[in-house]
Picture (tube, rainbow, N blue to C red):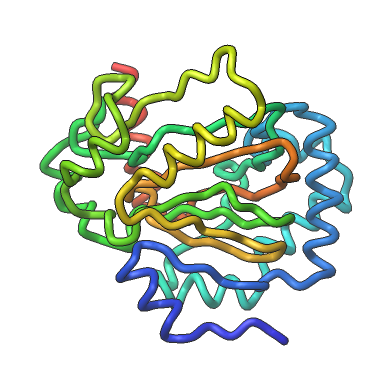
Length: 260
């Protein structure tokens, strides 16, 4: 059945901070993107590929076309425009990479991608931007079943709660909004799995966004989120921002301030 955007998708995004366009990629495109993803992995040999635009000169024409077809997919372009604005582009290839399977069970830190107290952020400016659901938007598009992403619904744009900070753990870089990194040293495979899932489940209100092949998750990265990974679950997931010229300008200015 062809994908149909509903009011529930829009409500989910503005209420929870995320929405999932289930099975929005047709099987034929999913197949082509899997083949393209294998070619990208052959060039990068990394759990996260470099940005795709850097690899395009080395990729076959078939792979490049698969990514372009993804960028131009009419139902997806329409859904992005209706949930966000017609000025949003979901597919800037210099902002896109691919996540692959890791070699051992692992878990990220509970974190917000950006916050008022992050280096280089202008607090007064960000205090306004964080309340605009259309400004910061990020994508995980699964080419195989992906159970990695965890998210706290409704957390984007509001202050941290004491329970969230306690569950995230002491910030490893001294910034509130970035949790601890788990020490897996000396732990067995199953112990690492258990430690990771307990850390994810320990965050109040957290949900696991299970994506099937062809599902597209659109979410606000300034909300609390995390990733839980295991090599027995094959992963190949497109990851990128949904951008506007204003957003790209903001990121460029932020990068300059961080480097200063």
